Every structure is written in C-alpha cells, then in structure tokens.
Length: 283
Image 1 (cartoon, rainbow, N blue to C red):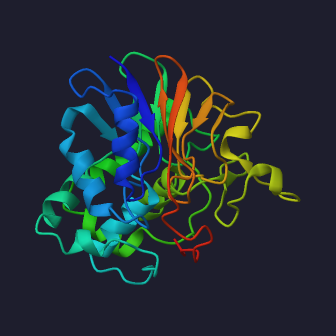
Image 2 (image 1 turned 135 degrees about the vertical axis):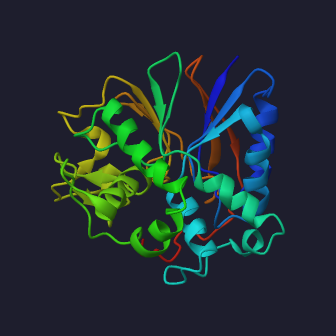
Image 3 (image 1 turned 90 degrees about the vertical axis):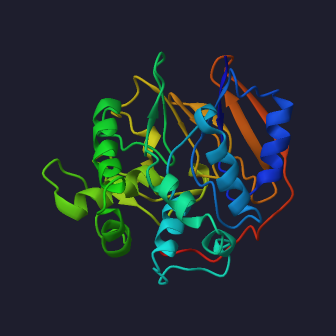
C-alpha cells in the first residue's frame, strides 16, 4: 500500500488521470491525498469534483481557498466572483447539491494513522503544534457539518480582518482565522499574524517582517512531516520538515504526486490552462 500526496488540481482532470496511470495507482491498495483546491480556473472543475468524490475510501482531501469559494458561490455570494472562475458547470449540474454536501464536510487537516505525517492546504501557523492545529481544524469542521455552515460561509468567512491569533479569540472571528490559516496563509510573523498580499517566492521578497510560515525558527509543529499545496510560485520543496506539492499544473507547470512511503516525487507536464497572471481575488 502506498500513499501519494497530490498537488492542487484546480479543475485539471486530464493531468490527474495521466499521473495516476504513471504511478500505477491501485484504488484497492493505495491512497491518494489531495491538498485541496480541487476546483476553479481549470476547464474540468465539475469533472474533478466528481472524480475525487467517486474515489471513495481511496481518496482523502482537505478544503482549500478555491473550494471555499465554490461553497460561497453555491450560496449566492457574488462579491468575490472573478472572470477567471470556472465554477458555473458545477453550480448548474444536476448533482450540485450532492457534490456541495460532500465537499463542505471535508476536513482542514488530515493526519496519517501510523506515521507522523499531516496534510493541509496552505500551512499551519508557527505558534500551533500539530495537535493543537488538529483541534482547531475540528472546530471548523464541526461547523461545516452542521446546519450553521451556510451562515458561516455566507456571512462570516470572507475578509482579512482577523489576521492575529490568540487562544481567547472566539465566535466567527475565531473560525475565520482558522480557515485563513489553513486555506490562505503563505507568510506570517512569529506570532501567527497573517500577511495575505505576499505571494512570490521567498527569494523575491525583501524588506518584510514576515517569513514563510514554515521558516520561523521557533515553529512548534516541526515534529511532523507537513504536506501542503496552495503556493505555486514556491514550487516543489522538501525542507523544514515540510513538502510543497503545488507545482503549477494550472499555469503550464506540472502535477505532482509525492509518495510518502518512498519519499519520491512523480510528475506529469501540463498545458497552460490559465493566464499565469490572473486578476487577484479579494479573499
């Protein structure tokens, strides 16, 4: 049995099919872990969502920022819709309710049952241990699996006002920070204050008090191997006890699967599905 962590799909199904064939993925014995952002901007968002859902127990996924964007669009939140969105085929599909009901119940973090490995979409703030992060993620998942999920997504999720964490943070602001950390974060300060505007590779970022979330010297979650996506400009990276898997499939890069058992990467080349300089989204 092998476990493969697969980078952001963002609606690009054909490379996934090619990649699974390349690694000779066996759904009876292997596991595919998807780092989130199954949908949006690529041409096959509906097909990707259906495919991963239909993999059943052979697949695990976490929620990414584009997945949350889909949930908001389903609820009629139009403020952050972009011309680059490719979500309409999902919203118009006959099985949209079933797909959304499945998606909203997915976690923010997945932990391996036997090994010290965890998967998230964007990262884990340096001031959280992996155990604490799992507890905070469960708080949000409890909301997302309850009737209150629509109120949270529609009225309280979006925005960058909640950028700093403290344990006493409560209510919707607490849940918003947790989602922002797991699904949007790239850079933050040592206390976990989030910075959303910086997206470039760390080598290109100067004169800032913010570091990549994984580079803080006193990071409390170094005891686990952390797999994440979200950051296509970072590319493939295996350092700091973390493994970056978003290798820019959407932008004409590659789709990557990291085999946790052999610690090897497997990739397939992708056509350029989207403008490499899309209009930024506000959330």
